Length: 118
Picture 1: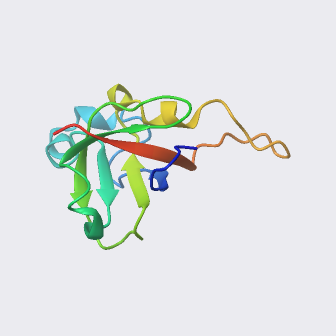
Picture 2: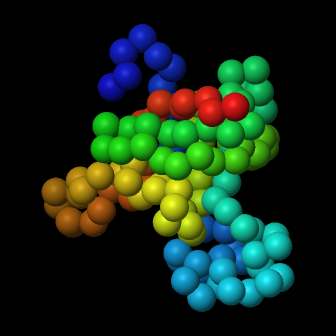
């Protein structure tokens, strides 16, 4: 996909405290203090490659700026982002493709490029 670059794979999911796109939960003061924005999780082996704020780019679109949190819970070159805040455009990265057999959206994994913001 991105010639001569490392292959990064993005998976998405929810933060336990936020519900879907945070339409209801973002009004909870306690939840907002703990989860006020989406986060990108990255393996710490990449600390020298990735800045504290990045954008992600796929064939389908580009995300807004995301704060990076390093964690050992992911394998190298695997990224995880929450998708509760529309301003970050996480779902734009997946396009309109779907599984041809069951017609479900391709919302769980996509190859991305990392763009360091700061």
